[in-house]
Structure formats: C-alpha cells, structure tokens
Image (cartoon, rainbow, N blue to C red; front, side, top):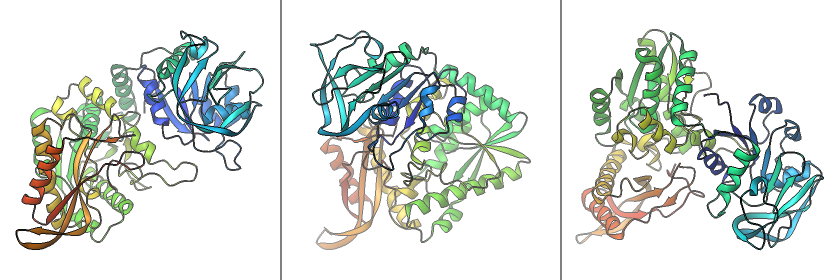
Length: 516
C-alpha cells in the first residue's frame, strides 16, 4: 500500500526461494517487493526501482514456453542481479549462450572468487573457496558481450559474472539460502554498493508513511475492520485506528468455526484493553448452512470468504454510509493466491482469492506488503501487548480448513475438544512460544481400535506442529516424545469418537502448513 522512495523489485520466475530474496533484502532495512516476471515494462519503470533482481526458476531459458521478461528492463539504467535462471536469462537476452549442462549442480558447491569488487567486495580471491548452494541443470556456455567472469565452481566456468560498463551482475548460485555462507554479503554489496540504497526502511518509518496514506485515501469517510483476534487483524485495527480514530468501527464475526472460548476471550480483550469500537455478530447458523455438504477445500474457502463480506456489507449498511473495509491481508497470502505462468494458485486465501469480484466496499490492506514477523514487530511498535502479538497464527476460515471433508456441528465439537488439549499441553510444556503453529486436524477416515475389551471404529486426529519464520517455508517441529504421548493419550481418553492420533512430519514445501 505504501510508497517507498527506495525499493528493490524482484521478478519471479517460479523459484521456491523467491520470497527468501525479498526477506534477505528487507533484513538489510531496504524495502523489496515481488512481481511476476512478465510485468509490463511501463509499470516497472513507473516504480522507479533502485535495483532489479531476476529470481531463479525451474524452466530452461531455451524452452519454447520459457518465462521471459521484457529485455527492455536492461535499458532502464538500473542495476540488475540475475540469480540462477535469472542469470542464464540475462546472458541469453544480452547475447550469450546457455545449454544443458553435462554435470548438473544441486546442493553445496565450492566457489572460487576471481574478482573482489562489486558483489564480491571485501572477500578474498583464490585459493580461498566459499561454500555456496547450487540448483541447476543448465549452464552458461558463452558469456554475453561486455561480461567477465568473477567466480567459478567445479562445473560452472561462469559461476558469477559482471558487466564491465553497466551495473549488471549474474550469479549461478543462490545467495538467498542459508547454505550459501557468503549470501548476505553478496546481497549487501548489490543493495548498498551497486544500487546505492540506504538502510532506512523500519517499522517506525512504515507506520508514519502508512498512516499518512490511509488518511489521504479515507478522508472523512467511515471504515469498518474485520477483526478476528489474530495478530494480523489486531495490528490492522490498531494501525487504521491511529490514522482515522473514531471513523473506524471493528466488526467481529463468530462464524461458528472458532475454537472453544475463542470468541469470548477475543471480545473481552478488545473491550478491556483497547479503545477500539467493536461490534460482535454471531453468524454460526448462517455459515454452517452455507457449508453444508461442501467437502472441496477451495469451495469451503470461497464460501467462507463470501460469507464474511456479505455480513460486513450488511453491518456497514446499519452504520450509515461506509466506504472502506480494512483487513489483515499479508504478503504470503498475496503471493500464494497469484496465478504463475498459467498454473493454479497454491490456495485461495479467504481474504484474497475468496473475495467476490463485485464488492461494494473498497479495501484497505495496510499489511499487504509485510511478512508475519514484520507484522509482530509492527504491533509492538504500535504498543499492542505481547499477548496479542505472540499468539500462534489461526486461519481466517478457522476450524473449517482443519476438518477434512464436510463440516458439521458434531465434527466441529470433536475437533474443538482435541484442539483444547493440544493448546493446553503445548503451553504447559513451554513449547507454545517455541513453535510457529501447533494444532489438531480431523481426518475424514475411521480406523479400528480397541477400548476396554470392545472393538471401536472411530475418527483419526492428526497433530501438526511447524517451525517457520514467515509461513512461506516450514519444517515439522521435533516435539519431545513424552509431549506427543501426553497429547495423544489425552485426546483418545477425553474426546469421545477418536481412537487414533497421528503426527504430521511433512515440511513446506511440498506440503502446506494447514491441510486445506
């Protein structure tokens, strides 16, 4: 939403680590944002980027349907860094040659630096070798005119290149991943050395700029804010409240898919500890009716999204003339909901892909550019208490996407009881704040068990706990066996209708954090 005087624009060619590039740049207190590789050159020019990064990607530049950006970006007079596929595309578009490699490089490789200027400023040249991370099956065979080699590896004679007159650099390795030990140095040299950026993008500056823009956009109009009690909507409400004060009314909708006691505790918190105006709506019956018989996860998300908007619009009508809806859309939501190169999105987030095409309220999404840890930092800067900031993420569609298959009141009751046990044991053991997210999922299958001397045929609950920084990637949490054992025993003994508990040991990618 906000304008930034300096920004690095990343063009995405489909790499799984594109988001990491943005994060690494932002960690240097320089703003960065991701756009599709085929962005219109006029739109790119209008952004006035301080630098452009061409990401990696799974394609080959010589494929007939390879993703190709407009070569006119090299005429913008802006420094460009090509990474992996981006490096190969730079070479091909500027007159070099890329071919299938006889020896592919995947994983750790040793980089020998030949030139210690530009992106390798401050590093030692050969015989010093640096560990980097490679992931490519093609290689640059002929450098484009004007380029010289600045580093090599065992199978890449052009592991890094620089243009002798223009601020163009290319690396075959991935500086954004932690396995590239000099990755942050390379990116820092590009950001501050070639692009001449300044490290002044902070949460304090973000608040000042965003508050100004919200005031300018809203004027004297009324705003409603979708409030869930999660960190994203709480921070959104606090930020919009700082900008427009009593022009804001927050609406909390209980969609019937909340956890045990969630609605009561959320409303109590906002009414006792903030000065926000909050209206609460119990729409349990409406949402369960809308979801009856629906098993497809995309359809669930869309119906929940439509339901929220319908209720917000109805409530806005009761408040008089309301023009804007503020909501806590985050950058990962936006990225995951984008269609890339003709492929379906990973999932439609209820507040991005789930919105009706014709909505009567204009959106205000002040967190749309931020990752989750940046939102938490922003919340603390705004003065929100830690109890609101360090809650584990809870999805907007609630338990609706943690019940596989049809949602019924009975199945919700089973999952709620299991969920209470997971949260109690995680908090009691001290693991709640150590992990990113921990929760229970109700599966659409039943299995045979034995309780007492009798055969049972009942539900399966899956436990999911992950470690992450921003939800773009995640590893399953290596929880202690005794903790898993306590959770499993309590669920099977205390939740009627469950006779088996399993633990999900999948990482993202290839899995997602939520099951739907």
